[in-house]
Length: 135
Image (cartoon, rainbow, N blue to C red; front, side, top):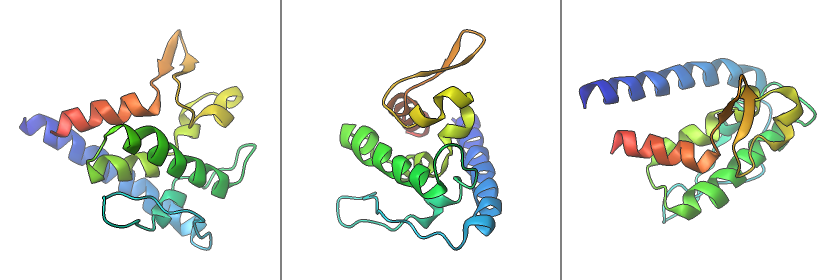
């Protein structure tokens, strides 16, 4: 269990460092949407923008909004509740992990090919597995 926690902590630290660097570049962009990470109130996640500094066929704001929609409608709606998982899914620029022809599909509820007969899992599965690791 200690190894799982260390790996997940390192993942979140790495993501946070990456996001802080990107956020410096995107600090003037303001999110248009909010995500509800709890059952009480929506939380403004301007950090969702920090991971979307690279624009490929869409603006940074479009990718940030797609991530927020992905978390709200695909992940949270299916029962993923861990705030750390939800925040990570909002921060990670999934479109940067798929080949160029698939960047516009990066936040859809489907696995996508990443080369060498491999796929990146659909967002819900990534969130489900991550939540299971930290439970």
